[in-house]
Amino acid sequence: MKHSILSAAWAVIYALTDFGKSVIHPLFVASAQPAYGDDDPLNAADVQDFANKDLNRLRGNVTRALARKSPYLDILQGGTLENGLSDTVRSVVQEQAVLNQSLTRPEFRPDTEMCGKTGESAEVGSTEYSYSLGTLRGMGPLVCVKGMRNAFAGSYAASEDALRKQIIQLTNADVRSLLVDRSGLKLVVKTSQSFEGMFTGNSQAIDTLFEDSFLPDASINFSLLEYLSIYMRENFLVDGFAGTQSEPLLKFIGGQDVISNLRDEAEIRTDHRYLASGQYKYGEKSLTGYTWEGPYRGFALGIDSQPLRFSSVDGDGQPVYIEPEIAVETDKGVAARINPLWARALFEVCLVVGADSFKKLAPESYNGEAGFKFPPQLYMGELKFKVIQDNADNVWADFGRHFYQISRAYQPIRPHAVCAIAFKRKSASFNLTALSNYPAYSSSDSL
Image (cartoon, one colour):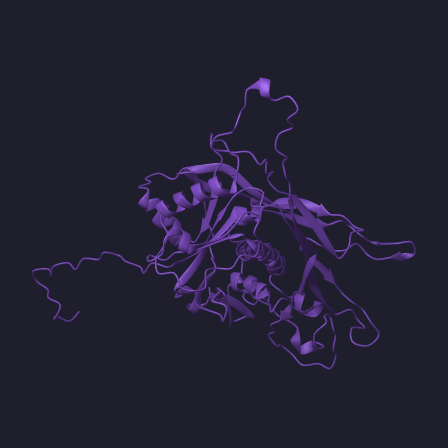
């Protein structure tokens, strides 16, 4: 269907370009200028017509946009950031104690010689991190009540639902960027390097950079992942996630093609599912059901439908990531299409994640104090539709739009429990075989 309801729903989503600046589809011109954001005032001509009109008396249900499945919903622990703390919060992590005793041959002396001896003095230490609350705000397209009256029933509800699900996707992208950027371990897959040459990072390290002296030239395989798993467990005491299996698993998150290659390498014929599902609560509803694949060789596998990709590095040798989607004009508004540069990118980033890496904190509710009272604040990406009536630009309360706000802080606990891996993507290979011509037909014949 040319004028599809689905494209109308996506039009709402991608009205949020540049984190809240509306991408508009002019419909009419008027003099009123309702300003519903901190950008330039919006004209009435900026009103978004993202609903399909029922001009032909169409019948049927509105197709709702689907949220992308994401493995980032249950990676981090949750918590609350209490009010009354400073703008920047300090977090102290107790390090492993140093007993100053040999761990190869502990020295035990005859008990009769121990009178008056106190033994070696142990030493302890800690690492301090700082973190603060961050906020992202955005708004939906400006709509007019006059335009909604004749819209196809359910169009606006479907568009609101699409916007709501894209906010969840934005939250997932925030978690992924945290894990990649702030992880304590990094690995660049290079055939000419030893593991130590490809690897950077250390215990309780944070914001570790990728090795900048070379680019990746190979993909990953289970052999490398298994060695990395052993290295993380032995050298940095990284714990896995508890599950129904006897051994806690590390979680591997990568693109669909990477997961497929790993499964082929392991000669997996049937798809076993790791019995642990993620859950992301959204208001009174929840998005549940992400199920990890595995276990395979000590890993639970999760698919990132839009992994981070790059084809170049910056002046510091760090990846310049490519946006996976671009906005294009449709019959009604704008919609998302895959960015060709992202689809053809040379390199990709995947993640190996252990338990207790970071904690995601939501701010405690705060409405002011004494006589200074504010309306309840939005923190978790809730959508709130506002009609701001005034005596100049919106006298008749014709115009309104959705607003949302996401506030969170990430508390580092064991950032070295995350290793970001940069690798070169494999070229598609299909092993196609040319077939012989039919007896009565040759390739030179015309159809």
